[in-house]
Length: 248
Image (cartoon, rainbow, N blue to C red; front, side, top):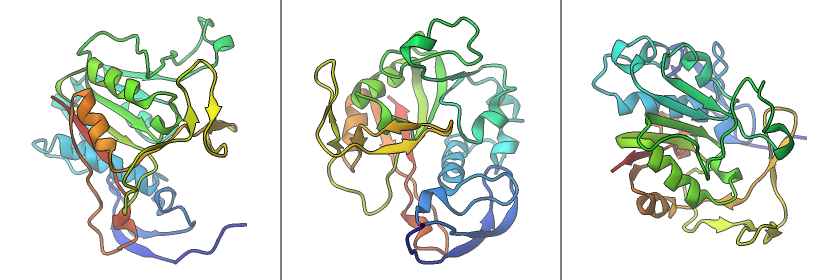
């Protein structure tokens, strides 16, 4: 049964499809609510799209659907990890779009995998291969996120962007905390096991609860980082955080 929550709404346009509407909070989880009635994008997805658009603010577009039609943007090399969410629907026809999934060991050798396997801690891509990397609520499920940040920095061109989300909203916890000890080959729980749905009918273990010091982690990996927030009439919506990390 859904826990009680404060009802809320705001009027605006969807940064993905451009639909004008009143966005309603329908569940307790703020980031997973305020769904677009047309393209079905969640609040966190729309804010991530807005952050991507802002990275290319010199282009005359206001929505993701317009951005993917822009000739300059279409020449960018883009990598998106994961298979869930609205972006791949718009990016799939771009000439330099790469997508990956993470498969268990017993499936990785299958040559017929429609979407290739990649491990964010050990990416197979060459140095400076991409202009833009997108991850959406994935890094909390990576065993060693600092290693993943460094790998993403490696495959980005200088000046390229990693635009991503993890479960963060204001007020931010001060410190990132590990839920699992991954110093050895075997995971050792440090906190009660916690899982998120993986969008495929299964679930993924949460390894890390991120805090405000995620900026320090990204700095150590070679990024300059900002944390844009919504600017809406809703104080609840404005708590949500997206992370934009630019490769130095």
